[in-house]
Length: 294
Ligand SMILES: Cc1cc2nc3c(=O)[nH]c(=O)nc-3n(C[C@H](O)[C@H](O)[C@H](O)COP(=O)(O)O)c2cc1C
Image (cartoon, rainbow, N blue to C red; front, side, top):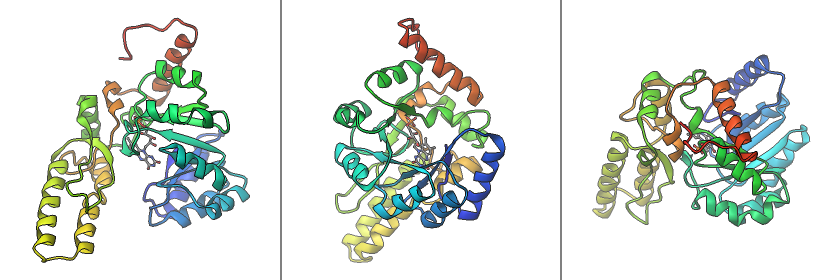
């Protein structure tokens, strides 16, 4: 999966072209509805005839889905609850990613295990890929047995040799344990904070201090509610890039799932996938080693 993130459409276009150069196998492009470039990113995927368009950041509209499907692409959306899954299916998506709260980055309200149970009836209707907190092949087999079409893993690949993440940031992931991957904290019910899971660092502390200060200034009548919300929401802007590209491990956003517990050594993507699938197959055959994934 190629992540569109906040890339401008020309940049995404170049990444798609570069991915076509690397493989003749199908791949997906992930774009997020709240990206400022979402519409032009979608156009880039359509123009490049991307076979699988994965839309995150909320349920994609009927119009967006129809536009993507007209190009022949399969459209996949995220579901963080049964209600979301049903709406996404009604809007026309062809598959879902059921992502639980253990995942890295923006998360929904339910843990993966509860979400999967909630979606058991949906699992039979369209392909559902399970994501969030998956670190070892044993778990993949478990979800496949429950009816999943596959699994999506993010955190396990952050430190892959092929990953462009800055070496200092990779070191931080390698050292972190599952308990270090915590959710962003919302201090005041009036000022919404999107739940994002990341490795706790100085930025997490600075975010709390910013909220305290912003809320105090709002209560003192120094700033409007809109200005206060804008400051709170703006805090994390650009910080994932700071961590990923610049190696700013203190004030960047170190998005990671609890599955960072299983990121223990630098491996190539091929090694990670071989290890995951070998353990998944052994589990399916009833032969899984019980010594854990490391
Ligand atoms: C560093 C990082 C960046 C991510 N960026 C995106 C993204 O741009 N779009 C998206 O839909 N999901 C994103 N995710 C979530 C992954 O697609 C995936 O669903 C999630 O990592 C699965 O849980 P896991 O982290 O426990 O493997 C990101 C996750 C991480 C760790």
